[in-house]
Image (tube, rainbow, N blue to C red; front, side, top):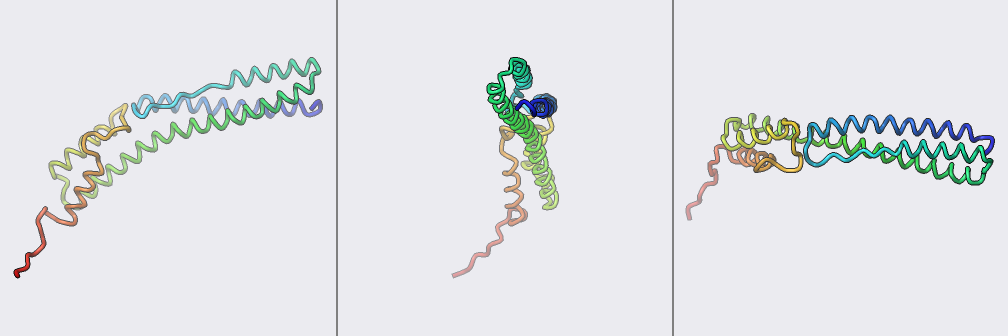
Length: 179
């Protein structure tokens, strides 16, 4: 412990700096999410960095007192805390990114339903156009609500287009047999 203390603390300082950088990015990402997505709510970004830096200061005190046993124990706890903070920071960043990914996915689905309706000649269908308009408005406004569909859900319009594809013009194409 005595020989490797400086190197161990340097590794911890570097790891804490990395956590701080990820958290800074996550806070910026959260600010963008809050501005653009109202629901589901963006998770908070905790800041364990000040506490981790205080732990390093306490370790320096233990070193100056020559309490190597307690210093070794504290080093293990701080290393564990830094790993947990890093994992939590990356998870928070991922959770926030997933909200944007979900919005993009829903926008893409809506565009694909619109393209399918055009291909099927249903682009001017009153009900589908209304559903598309409401869904488009909800997904492109800021902040948008990803938690609820705007009226009848967009997949309904896909089902409507599918039923039209199987039965163009809504006509019944089955023939009656005479007995």
